[in-house]
View (cartoon, one colour):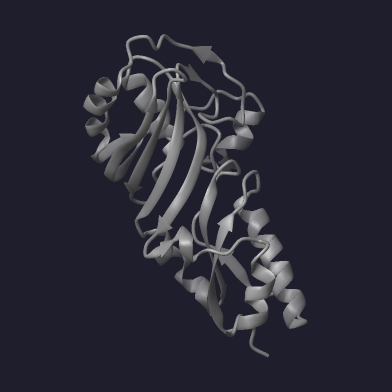
Length: 232
């Protein structure tokens, strides 16, 4: 494998690490092993710090395929806490509002989920990397600025309820979707559609295109994999 010419590295991004942080770590390890100052490297699609899962890293000339890879379909598993919301729609921020949940049943959830399948309009989270007049939305949000992001068309191909606990009011879903879909926003919208609130407590990207989480390396596994695949 020639990392200078171009290669793909599939990483299972750790919890509480940014996608750029994961890239920077792998780039450092590869550059050190190849005895070069800096290997050219980019990633094909950002994952939130509180999410884990498939992160495709492209090196050398393979970075030209990043845009193509970003267009591929994706699959996620997620756990939602019903009955409350947070400003970021996940656990990055504390709960800011609570809602009733006594009326929520498995049957109601199963009746509600199909309305999110297909081509839908979705408002991105304010705490996101979306650009607003040249600034990242999360940068404006952290300054306390009230910015409204316009809803964007996204596509959800499959939405499956995989678990529901009526005692803790937590539900788990599997989502297959297209580019630009925010699972945090989907959680918020599902909560609202159930006449309550919801935020993410766990999120894992299990597939990007044909690359599945089973194909991915952990940080612990990467050095040995590098030794087995390095060229030069």
